Image (cartoon, rainbow, N blue to C red; front, side, top):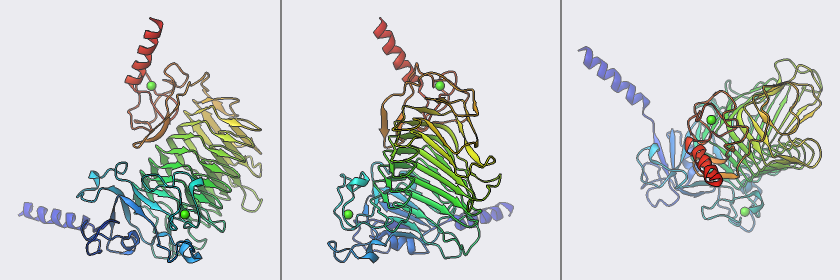
Length: 483
Ligand SMILES: [Ca+2]
Ligand SMILES: [Ca+2]
Protein backbone atom coordinates (compact mmCIF):
# COMPACT_ATOMS: atom_id res chain seq x y z
CA UNK A 1 0.00 0.00 0.00
CA UNK A 2 2.76 2.33 1.01
CA UNK A 3 4.71 1.48 -2.14
CA UNK A 4 1.68 2.11 -4.32
CA UNK A 5 1.18 5.49 -2.66
CA UNK A 6 4.81 6.33 -3.19
CA UNK A 7 4.54 5.40 -6.87
CA UNK A 8 1.44 7.56 -7.24
CA UNK A 9 3.25 10.50 -5.64
CA UNK A 10 6.25 9.90 -7.87
CA UNK A 11 4.05 9.77 -10.98
CA UNK A 12 2.37 13.01 -9.95
CA UNK A 13 5.73 14.64 -9.34
CA UNK A 14 6.99 13.56 -12.76
CA UNK A 15 3.87 14.80 -14.50
CA UNK A 16 4.12 18.14 -12.73
CA UNK A 17 7.70 18.40 -13.98
CA UNK A 18 6.64 17.77 -17.57
CA UNK A 19 6.77 20.79 -19.83
CA UNK A 20 5.72 21.56 -23.34
CA UNK A 21 8.39 21.50 -26.03
CA UNK A 22 7.70 23.46 -29.18
CA UNK A 23 9.66 22.94 -32.37
CA UNK A 24 10.91 25.56 -34.80
CA UNK A 25 12.51 24.71 -38.13
CA UNK A 26 12.84 27.24 -40.92
CA UNK A 27 12.87 24.32 -43.40
CA UNK A 28 9.74 22.59 -42.08
CA UNK A 29 6.88 22.04 -44.50
CA UNK A 30 4.20 20.62 -42.21
CA UNK A 31 1.32 22.06 -40.24
CA UNK A 32 3.37 24.99 -38.83
CA UNK A 33 1.99 24.39 -35.35
CA UNK A 34 5.19 23.69 -33.43
CA UNK A 35 4.04 20.28 -32.17
CA UNK A 36 6.80 18.17 -33.75
CA UNK A 37 9.83 18.54 -36.00
CA UNK A 38 7.64 17.62 -39.01
CA UNK A 39 4.99 20.18 -38.07
CA UNK A 40 7.43 22.72 -36.63
CA UNK A 41 6.82 26.44 -36.65
CA UNK A 42 8.85 28.01 -39.43
CA UNK A 43 8.85 31.29 -37.51
CA UNK A 44 10.62 31.55 -34.13
CA UNK A 45 8.45 34.35 -32.73
CA UNK A 46 5.34 32.15 -32.94
CA UNK A 47 6.91 29.78 -30.42
CA UNK A 48 8.25 32.60 -28.25
CA UNK A 49 4.76 34.11 -28.06
CA UNK A 50 2.84 30.85 -27.50
CA UNK A 51 2.40 30.59 -23.72
CA UNK A 52 2.17 26.80 -23.99
CA UNK A 53 5.79 26.58 -25.14
CA UNK A 54 7.93 26.24 -22.02
CA UNK A 55 10.85 25.08 -24.10
CA UNK A 56 11.60 25.97 -27.72
CA UNK A 57 13.87 23.74 -29.81
CA UNK A 58 15.23 25.53 -32.86
CA UNK A 59 16.76 23.68 -35.81
CA UNK A 60 19.85 24.91 -37.65
CA UNK A 61 19.34 27.70 -40.13
CA UNK A 62 18.94 31.47 -40.22
CA UNK A 63 16.00 33.15 -38.50
CA UNK A 64 15.09 36.82 -38.93
CA UNK A 65 12.47 38.70 -36.93
CA UNK A 66 10.64 40.12 -39.93
CA UNK A 67 10.51 39.87 -43.71
CA UNK A 68 10.24 43.41 -45.05
CA UNK A 69 7.48 44.09 -47.56
CA UNK A 70 10.11 45.72 -49.73
CA UNK A 71 13.73 44.84 -48.94
CA UNK A 72 14.86 47.86 -50.95
CA UNK A 73 12.81 50.17 -48.74
CA UNK A 74 12.69 48.89 -45.18
CA UNK A 75 10.25 50.84 -43.00
CA UNK A 76 11.06 52.16 -39.49
CA UNK A 77 8.51 49.73 -38.06
CA UNK A 78 10.24 46.80 -39.73
CA UNK A 79 13.63 47.95 -38.46
CA UNK A 80 12.17 48.15 -34.95
CA UNK A 81 11.03 44.52 -35.06
CA UNK A 82 12.97 42.10 -32.84
CA UNK A 83 12.58 38.59 -31.58
CA UNK A 84 10.68 39.51 -28.43
CA UNK A 85 10.99 37.77 -25.10
CA UNK A 86 7.53 38.42 -23.69
CA UNK A 87 7.49 35.72 -20.99
CA UNK A 88 9.92 33.30 -19.34
CA UNK A 89 11.00 30.66 -21.85
CA UNK A 90 13.91 28.35 -22.58
CA UNK A 91 15.34 28.72 -26.09
CA UNK A 92 17.62 25.97 -27.38
CA UNK A 93 19.44 26.12 -30.72
CA UNK A 94 21.81 23.67 -32.39
CA UNK A 95 19.46 20.89 -33.54
CA UNK A 96 19.74 19.18 -36.91
CA UNK A 97 15.98 18.70 -36.73
CA UNK A 98 15.33 15.12 -35.66
CA UNK A 99 16.56 15.00 -32.06
CA UNK A 100 14.48 13.79 -29.15
CA UNK A 101 16.64 15.15 -26.32
CA UNK A 102 18.33 18.53 -25.79
CA UNK A 103 21.57 16.75 -24.98
CA UNK A 104 21.71 15.29 -28.51
CA UNK A 105 22.19 18.67 -30.17
CA UNK A 106 25.45 20.22 -31.29
CA UNK A 107 25.32 24.03 -31.67
CA UNK A 108 28.76 24.11 -33.31
CA UNK A 109 27.80 21.57 -36.00
CA UNK A 110 24.22 22.76 -36.49
CA UNK A 111 24.45 26.51 -36.19
CA UNK A 112 21.20 28.25 -35.31
CA UNK A 113 21.48 31.90 -36.29
CA UNK A 114 19.25 34.76 -35.20
CA UNK A 115 20.07 37.52 -37.67
CA UNK A 116 19.08 41.17 -37.95
CA UNK A 117 19.94 41.29 -41.65
CA UNK A 118 16.30 41.65 -42.66
CA UNK A 119 17.12 43.33 -45.99
CA UNK A 120 19.33 40.37 -46.85
CA UNK A 121 22.37 42.23 -48.13
CA UNK A 122 25.07 41.90 -45.44
CA UNK A 123 28.31 40.14 -46.22
CA UNK A 124 27.78 36.80 -44.49
CA UNK A 125 29.76 33.61 -44.03
CA UNK A 126 28.65 30.13 -45.10
CA UNK A 127 26.46 29.85 -41.99
CA UNK A 128 24.63 33.11 -42.65
CA UNK A 129 26.49 34.97 -39.90
CA UNK A 130 27.55 38.58 -40.36
CA UNK A 131 31.04 37.88 -39.04
CA UNK A 132 32.09 41.46 -38.27
CA UNK A 133 30.16 44.66 -37.64
CA UNK A 134 31.79 46.19 -40.74
CA UNK A 135 30.00 43.53 -42.82
CA UNK A 136 26.63 45.08 -41.95
CA UNK A 137 25.00 46.71 -44.99
CA UNK A 138 21.75 48.64 -45.34
CA UNK A 139 18.82 48.60 -42.92
CA UNK A 140 19.09 45.85 -40.32
CA UNK A 141 16.91 45.42 -37.24
CA UNK A 142 17.73 47.55 -34.23
CA UNK A 143 17.89 44.63 -31.79
CA UNK A 144 17.93 41.01 -32.86
CA UNK A 145 16.54 39.94 -29.49
CA UNK A 146 14.79 42.12 -26.94
CA UNK A 147 13.15 41.58 -23.56
CA UNK A 148 9.73 43.24 -23.53
CA UNK A 149 8.59 44.32 -20.07
CA UNK A 150 5.15 45.08 -18.81
CA UNK A 151 3.76 41.71 -17.78
CA UNK A 152 3.45 40.24 -14.31
CA UNK A 153 6.75 38.39 -14.42
CA UNK A 154 10.03 39.36 -15.99
CA UNK A 155 10.53 37.86 -19.46
CA UNK A 156 14.25 37.77 -18.66
CA UNK A 157 14.25 36.37 -15.13
CA UNK A 158 15.94 33.19 -13.93
CA UNK A 159 13.40 30.99 -15.76
CA UNK A 160 14.58 32.33 -19.11
CA UNK A 161 17.40 30.39 -20.75
CA UNK A 162 19.08 31.17 -24.07
CA UNK A 163 21.33 28.31 -25.15
CA UNK A 164 23.21 27.37 -28.31
CA UNK A 165 22.37 30.36 -30.51
CA UNK A 166 24.40 32.77 -32.64
CA UNK A 167 23.06 36.33 -32.53
CA UNK A 168 24.27 38.53 -35.38
CA UNK A 169 23.73 41.66 -37.46
CA UNK A 170 21.69 43.78 -35.06
CA UNK A 171 22.21 47.52 -35.55
CA UNK A 172 20.61 49.92 -33.12
CA UNK A 173 19.71 53.46 -34.03
CA UNK A 174 18.49 56.37 -31.87
CA UNK A 175 21.07 55.77 -29.12
CA UNK A 176 19.66 52.44 -28.02
CA UNK A 177 21.98 50.00 -26.25
CA UNK A 178 22.19 46.31 -27.15
CA UNK A 179 22.53 45.55 -30.86
CA UNK A 180 22.33 41.77 -30.40
CA UNK A 181 20.20 41.55 -27.25
CA UNK A 182 18.77 44.28 -25.09
CA UNK A 183 17.56 43.72 -21.51
CA UNK A 184 16.55 47.20 -20.39
CA UNK A 185 13.50 47.36 -18.11
CA UNK A 186 11.70 50.67 -17.88
CA UNK A 187 12.57 52.81 -14.86
CA UNK A 188 9.16 52.14 -13.35
CA UNK A 189 9.03 48.37 -13.21
CA UNK A 190 5.55 46.99 -12.72
CA UNK A 191 6.61 43.86 -10.91
CA UNK A 192 9.04 42.93 -8.17
CA UNK A 193 12.01 40.66 -8.45
CA UNK A 194 15.01 40.12 -10.67
CA UNK A 195 14.32 41.73 -14.01
CA UNK A 196 17.48 40.87 -15.97
CA UNK A 197 18.58 37.60 -14.40
CA UNK A 198 18.40 35.34 -17.42
CA UNK A 199 20.69 32.36 -17.98
CA UNK A 200 22.70 32.07 -21.17
CA UNK A 201 25.15 29.45 -22.40
CA UNK A 202 26.98 28.70 -25.63
CA UNK A 203 25.65 31.91 -27.17
CA UNK A 204 27.76 33.80 -29.71
CA UNK A 205 27.23 37.53 -30.24
CA UNK A 206 28.99 38.30 -33.49
CA UNK A 207 28.93 41.23 -35.90
CA UNK A 208 26.42 43.43 -34.07
CA UNK A 209 26.52 47.21 -33.66
CA UNK A 210 25.02 49.77 -31.32
CA UNK A 211 24.68 53.49 -31.87
CA UNK A 212 24.99 53.71 -28.07
CA UNK A 213 26.45 51.02 -25.79
CA UNK A 214 26.74 47.26 -25.85
CA UNK A 215 27.22 46.24 -29.46
CA UNK A 216 26.49 42.59 -28.61
CA UNK A 217 24.55 42.64 -25.35
CA UNK A 218 23.29 45.35 -23.03
CA UNK A 219 21.92 44.82 -19.51
CA UNK A 220 20.73 48.07 -17.96
CA UNK A 221 18.87 48.36 -14.66
CA UNK A 222 17.48 51.59 -13.27
CA UNK A 223 15.56 52.61 -10.15
CA UNK A 224 16.03 49.75 -7.71
CA UNK A 225 16.14 47.08 -10.40
CA UNK A 226 17.91 43.80 -9.86
CA UNK A 227 20.03 42.08 -12.49
CA UNK A 228 21.81 38.81 -11.87
CA UNK A 229 22.45 37.26 -15.28
CA UNK A 230 24.38 34.00 -15.54
CA UNK A 231 26.51 33.69 -18.70
CA UNK A 232 28.49 30.50 -19.35
CA UNK A 233 30.66 30.02 -22.44
CA UNK A 234 29.29 33.12 -24.13
CA UNK A 235 31.36 34.78 -26.85
CA UNK A 236 31.48 38.37 -28.03
CA UNK A 237 33.20 38.60 -31.41
CA UNK A 238 33.54 41.52 -33.82
CA UNK A 239 30.87 43.77 -32.31
CA UNK A 240 31.01 47.56 -32.00
CA UNK A 241 29.45 50.25 -29.83
CA UNK A 242 29.66 53.93 -30.69
CA UNK A 243 30.04 54.80 -26.99
CA UNK A 244 30.95 52.05 -24.50
CA UNK A 245 31.12 48.28 -24.29
CA UNK A 246 31.80 47.02 -27.80
CA UNK A 247 30.88 43.48 -26.79
CA UNK A 248 28.99 43.86 -23.51
CA UNK A 249 27.51 46.77 -21.58
CA UNK A 250 26.44 46.38 -17.95
CA UNK A 251 24.95 49.37 -16.18
CA UNK A 252 23.24 49.90 -12.84
CA UNK A 253 21.90 53.21 -11.58
CA UNK A 254 19.66 54.78 -8.97
CA UNK A 255 19.79 52.23 -6.20
CA UNK A 256 19.71 49.18 -8.42
CA UNK A 257 21.96 46.15 -7.97
CA UNK A 258 23.72 44.31 -10.76
CA UNK A 259 25.67 41.19 -9.90
CA UNK A 260 25.77 38.13 -12.11
CA UNK A 261 28.35 35.70 -13.33
CA UNK A 262 30.32 35.46 -16.57
CA UNK A 263 32.41 32.34 -16.88
CA UNK A 264 34.40 30.67 -19.66
CA UNK A 265 33.67 33.63 -21.95
CA UNK A 266 35.53 35.07 -24.92
CA UNK A 267 35.72 38.77 -25.83
CA UNK A 268 37.54 39.03 -29.14
CA UNK A 269 37.88 41.79 -31.71
CA UNK A 270 35.19 44.09 -30.33
CA UNK A 271 35.42 47.88 -30.60
CA UNK A 272 34.07 50.86 -28.68
CA UNK A 273 34.20 54.55 -29.53
CA UNK A 274 34.47 55.91 -25.97
CA UNK A 275 35.51 53.17 -23.58
CA UNK A 276 35.59 49.45 -22.92
CA UNK A 277 36.33 47.74 -26.24
CA UNK A 278 35.22 44.38 -24.83
CA UNK A 279 33.25 45.28 -21.70
CA UNK A 280 31.94 48.44 -20.10
CA UNK A 281 30.71 48.36 -16.51
CA UNK A 282 29.01 51.46 -15.12
CA UNK A 283 27.45 52.28 -11.78
CA UNK A 284 25.75 55.56 -10.97
CA UNK A 285 24.46 55.74 -7.40
CA UNK A 286 24.22 51.96 -7.53
CA UNK A 287 26.17 48.77 -7.18
CA UNK A 288 27.50 46.83 -10.17
CA UNK A 289 29.63 43.84 -9.20
CA UNK A 290 29.65 41.00 -11.72
CA UNK A 291 31.96 38.04 -11.30
CA UNK A 292 34.08 37.18 -14.35
CA UNK A 293 36.08 33.95 -14.32
CA UNK A 294 38.12 31.74 -16.68
CA UNK A 295 37.67 34.28 -19.48
CA UNK A 296 39.83 35.68 -22.29
CA UNK A 297 39.89 39.24 -23.60
CA UNK A 298 41.89 39.40 -26.83
CA UNK A 299 42.16 41.94 -29.64
CA UNK A 300 39.52 44.38 -28.42
CA UNK A 301 40.04 48.09 -28.95
CA UNK A 302 38.70 51.55 -28.22
CA UNK A 303 39.24 55.10 -29.40
CA UNK A 304 39.04 56.11 -25.72
CA UNK A 305 39.76 54.33 -22.44
CA UNK A 306 40.07 50.64 -21.61
CA UNK A 307 40.88 48.45 -24.62
CA UNK A 308 39.43 45.34 -23.01
CA UNK A 309 37.51 46.62 -19.98
CA UNK A 310 36.40 50.02 -18.70
CA UNK A 311 34.63 50.65 -15.42
CA UNK A 312 33.01 53.88 -14.30
CA UNK A 313 31.48 54.83 -10.98
CA UNK A 314 29.76 58.07 -10.08
CA UNK A 315 27.30 59.50 -7.61
CA UNK A 316 23.74 59.92 -8.75
CA UNK A 317 23.98 63.62 -9.64
CA UNK A 318 27.51 64.41 -8.70
CA UNK A 319 26.75 63.67 -5.04
CA UNK A 320 28.41 61.26 -2.69
CA UNK A 321 28.77 57.56 -3.39
CA UNK A 322 27.60 55.31 -0.57
CA UNK A 323 30.08 52.79 0.73
CA UNK A 324 28.00 50.00 -0.73
CA UNK A 325 28.16 51.49 -4.20
CA UNK A 326 30.66 50.99 -6.91
CA UNK A 327 31.62 49.55 -10.24
CA UNK A 328 33.32 46.59 -8.70
CA UNK A 329 34.06 43.63 -10.96
CA UNK A 330 35.45 40.46 -9.41
CA UNK A 331 37.82 39.00 -11.98
CA UNK A 332 39.54 35.68 -11.32
CA UNK A 333 41.68 33.69 -13.76
CA UNK A 334 41.16 36.13 -16.62
CA UNK A 335 43.63 36.67 -19.48
CA UNK A 336 43.77 40.17 -20.97
CA UNK A 337 46.14 40.41 -23.93
CA UNK A 338 46.46 42.08 -27.33
CA UNK A 339 43.96 44.83 -26.58
CA UNK A 340 44.44 48.51 -27.48
CA UNK A 341 43.21 51.87 -26.23
CA UNK A 342 43.91 55.23 -27.80
CA UNK A 343 43.66 57.14 -24.53
CA UNK A 344 45.10 54.74 -21.99
CA UNK A 345 44.33 51.56 -20.19
CA UNK A 346 45.20 49.31 -23.11
CA UNK A 347 43.95 46.48 -20.90
CA UNK A 348 41.75 48.00 -18.21
CA UNK A 349 40.65 51.53 -17.36
CA UNK A 350 39.04 52.35 -14.05
CA UNK A 351 37.31 55.65 -13.46
CA UNK A 352 36.06 57.09 -10.20
CA UNK A 353 34.20 60.09 -11.50
CA UNK A 354 33.83 61.96 -8.23
CA UNK A 355 37.06 60.75 -6.63
CA UNK A 356 35.08 59.32 -3.75
CA UNK A 357 37.39 57.55 -1.35
CA UNK A 358 34.76 55.00 -0.36
CA UNK A 359 33.93 53.87 -3.89
CA UNK A 360 34.77 50.30 -4.66
CA UNK A 361 36.89 49.59 -7.68
CA UNK A 362 37.15 45.84 -8.07
CA UNK A 363 39.10 42.73 -7.19
CA UNK A 364 41.54 41.26 -9.72
CA UNK A 365 42.92 37.86 -8.88
CA UNK A 366 45.12 35.38 -10.74
CA UNK A 367 45.14 37.60 -13.81
CA UNK A 368 47.40 37.71 -16.84
CA UNK A 369 47.54 41.29 -18.11
CA UNK A 370 50.19 41.30 -20.79
CA UNK A 371 50.89 42.53 -24.30
CA UNK A 372 48.29 45.30 -24.41
CA UNK A 373 49.00 48.70 -25.98
CA UNK A 374 47.92 52.32 -25.69
CA UNK A 375 48.58 55.31 -27.92
CA UNK A 376 48.84 57.53 -24.85
CA UNK A 377 48.65 56.68 -21.15
CA UNK A 378 49.32 53.31 -19.54
CA UNK A 379 49.26 50.16 -21.68
CA UNK A 380 48.00 47.98 -18.80
CA UNK A 381 45.96 49.38 -15.90
CA UNK A 382 44.80 52.96 -16.03
CA UNK A 383 43.31 54.90 -13.14
CA UNK A 384 41.27 57.97 -13.72
CA UNK A 385 40.42 60.03 -10.65
CA UNK A 386 41.64 57.52 -8.12
CA UNK A 387 41.77 56.50 -5.30
CA UNK A 388 39.51 53.52 -5.27
CA UNK A 389 39.30 50.59 -2.94
CA UNK A 390 40.54 47.78 -5.12
CA UNK A 391 43.06 44.96 -4.99
CA UNK A 392 45.20 43.00 -7.42
CA UNK A 393 46.46 39.68 -6.09
CA UNK A 394 48.51 36.81 -7.45
CA UNK A 395 48.66 38.34 -10.91
CA UNK A 396 51.21 39.03 -13.60
CA UNK A 397 50.73 42.62 -14.78
CA UNK A 398 52.88 44.18 -17.47
CA UNK A 399 53.92 47.74 -16.68
CA UNK A 400 53.15 49.19 -13.32
CA UNK A 401 50.93 47.29 -10.97
CA UNK A 402 48.48 49.69 -9.35
CA UNK A 403 48.10 50.33 -5.64
CA UNK A 404 47.06 47.47 -3.40
CA UNK A 405 48.94 44.78 -5.28
CA UNK A 406 49.59 41.67 -3.25
CA UNK A 407 51.76 38.70 -4.09
CA UNK A 408 52.52 40.08 -7.55
CA UNK A 409 54.03 37.57 -9.98
CA UNK A 410 56.97 38.92 -11.93
CA UNK A 411 58.24 37.79 -15.31
CA UNK A 412 56.84 37.21 -18.78
CA UNK A 413 53.91 34.75 -19.05
CA UNK A 414 55.14 33.98 -22.60
CA UNK A 415 51.65 33.74 -24.01
CA UNK A 416 51.18 31.79 -27.22
CA UNK A 417 49.15 32.91 -30.24
CA UNK A 418 45.35 32.91 -30.03
CA UNK A 419 43.73 29.51 -30.53
CA UNK A 420 40.04 29.21 -31.27
CA UNK A 421 37.67 26.29 -31.01
CA UNK A 422 33.93 25.90 -31.56
CA UNK A 423 33.84 24.33 -28.11
CA UNK A 424 35.40 27.05 -26.00
CA UNK A 425 36.06 30.21 -28.01
CA UNK A 426 39.48 31.85 -28.03
CA UNK A 427 42.32 31.21 -25.58
CA UNK A 428 46.03 32.10 -25.32
CA UNK A 429 48.09 29.36 -23.73
CA UNK A 430 50.66 30.43 -21.17
CA UNK A 431 54.22 29.44 -22.07
CA UNK A 432 55.42 26.34 -20.24
CA UNK A 433 58.49 28.24 -19.09
CA UNK A 434 56.59 31.47 -18.45
CA UNK A 435 55.64 33.21 -15.25
CA UNK A 436 52.00 32.14 -15.22
CA UNK A 437 52.43 28.37 -14.97
CA UNK A 438 51.89 26.89 -11.52
CA UNK A 439 52.02 30.39 -10.07
CA UNK A 440 49.16 30.20 -7.60
CA UNK A 441 46.89 27.93 -5.63
CA UNK A 442 43.70 26.78 -7.31
CA UNK A 443 40.29 28.38 -7.05
CA UNK A 444 38.41 26.58 -9.82
CA UNK A 445 38.19 22.92 -10.77
CA UNK A 446 38.26 23.70 -14.52
CA UNK A 447 39.59 26.30 -16.95
CA UNK A 448 38.03 28.08 -19.93
CA UNK A 449 38.49 24.99 -22.09
CA UNK A 450 36.89 22.79 -19.47
CA UNK A 451 40.27 21.21 -18.67
CA UNK A 452 40.71 20.17 -15.04
CA UNK A 453 42.77 22.37 -12.74
CA UNK A 454 45.44 21.90 -11.64
CA UNK A 455 47.80 20.13 -13.93
CA UNK A 456 51.37 20.14 -12.69
CA UNK A 457 52.05 21.17 -9.11
CA UNK A 458 49.65 24.08 -8.95
CA UNK A 459 47.29 26.29 -10.92
CA UNK A 460 48.23 28.57 -13.79
CA UNK A 461 47.27 32.23 -13.86
CA UNK A 462 44.83 33.41 -16.50
CA UNK A 463 41.99 31.65 -18.27
CA UNK A 464 43.66 28.37 -19.21
CA UNK A 465 45.63 25.64 -17.51
CA UNK A 466 48.32 23.93 -19.57
CA UNK A 467 47.46 20.24 -19.79
CA UNK A 468 50.01 17.56 -18.82
CA UNK A 469 50.32 16.75 -22.55
CA UNK A 470 51.03 20.37 -23.47
CA UNK A 471 53.63 20.62 -20.72
CA UNK A 472 55.18 17.37 -21.94
CA UNK A 473 55.30 18.45 -25.60
CA UNK A 474 57.11 21.64 -24.69
CA UNK A 475 59.56 19.64 -22.63
CA UNK A 476 60.06 17.21 -25.53
CA UNK A 477 60.64 20.07 -28.01
CA UNK A 478 63.18 21.61 -25.69
CA UNK A 479 64.92 18.27 -25.22
CA UNK A 480 65.14 17.73 -28.98
CA UNK A 481 66.37 21.27 -29.58
CA UNK A 482 69.04 20.88 -26.95
CA UNK A 483 69.91 17.31 -27.97
CA1 LIG B 1 21.52 44.30 -44.24
CA1 LIG C 1 49.50 24.16 -13.57
